[in-house]
Length: 300
Ligand SMILES: Cc1ncc(C[n+]2csc(CCOP(=O)(O)OP(=O)(O)O)c2C)c(N)n1
Ligand SMILES: [Mg+2]
Image (cartoon, rainbow, N blue to C red):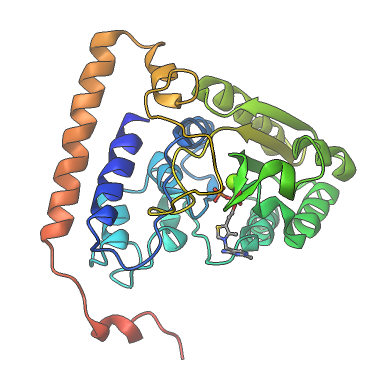
């Protein structure tokens, strides 16, 4: 969580410096979900993350170099210099299966990934992460229904940060929870404190075990806060509440820190800060790529 926090802050600093050609969606506040989820998955299990998913892909095992390379449009990025940042993070070797520019595509891709594992006899679980806003897509219905009917090894992981861009949860969702939809699909559903990494881990672990044992999918709704705007630079005029970093009631980092002895926490903080700084500097110093890469990896 500390590594992800430092990486998020470093990227934010870079984006705020103005040398970034796109929208950056900060995952500050989502670190416990990323780590609790990845820790419950095996290396061979598959993960579909989100546009806010830097933490998820790092927790799943994607290198900082590849992540920063994608953000900074360098050769070492997983898109090998084609850029585009978070939506295109992918490293199948560690089970990071990519995402897309449109929300909701990963519901059906995730169900397909789990179906493939079943057909091929692979002992793999697929975790699909999505936001409270994205849960409104019609693809959720068809993927959830099919995955439950066929008992596919999927875990649906909703990061409910109470916002879909500028729309508050109560405005875009007619029910108190998203988890209560689970019953309609014949799967278990639960609301979990998404700022508590250990609670996330326990819940995801149970769902992963169930999926692996042939019990089919589950729907977990992990409640947390989006600590920054929808994108870096979002003035959030629609939002009164401001969430501060280091708030022990809202920020997942101090909550985890309180469970570790202070010396260990300090050491991890120092080491991860240095690791992030070194990786970011190295990628920043590498040459950017030009238009010559555009036809690479294109199948005609
Ligand atoms: C199909 C589709 N509709 C709209 C968008 C634009 N968009 C990108 S992120 C976002 C908000 C998503 O909210 P949520 O799913 O709750 O995720 P969060 O940003 O809160 O992590 C929107 C509307 C999109 N990328 N794809
Ligand atoms: Mg949201």
